[in-house]
Image 1: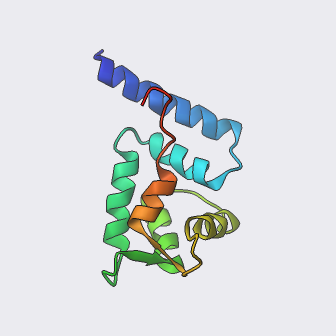
Image 2: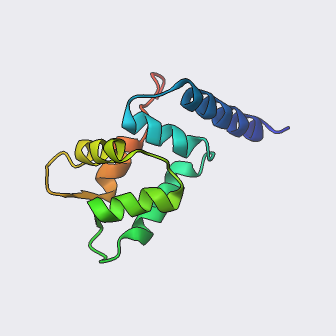
Image 3: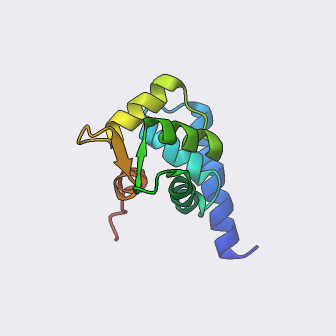
Length: 113
C-alpha cells in the first residue's frame, strides 16, 4: 500500500473513531465528518456549498446552509446546525460567505508549519 493511501485510510479511521466517541463542538463534528470522507472531504464541501448558493451571491443564508449540510450527508441536529451557523456567522449578518466558512472548518496548523 502506498504511503498516501495509508495516510488517507488512517485519517478516515481516526475521524470515524473520534465521531463514535462523541464530539460536542459542532465545528469539530463537521470537520470530522468531512475528514471521514477522505482528503477531498473539506474541498468537496466547499464545492458543494458553492453549488447550493442558489442566488449566486457567494453567501449562504440559514436555509441554504441547512440544505447544503443535508445534501452533503452531514448529520447534525437542528440545534447543532443553528449553533454552527451562528458561530460561523460571526458578524451576525444572517449569511455565511465561503471564505469565512472554510476558515472555520480548516483544521489548525501543526507546530512545524
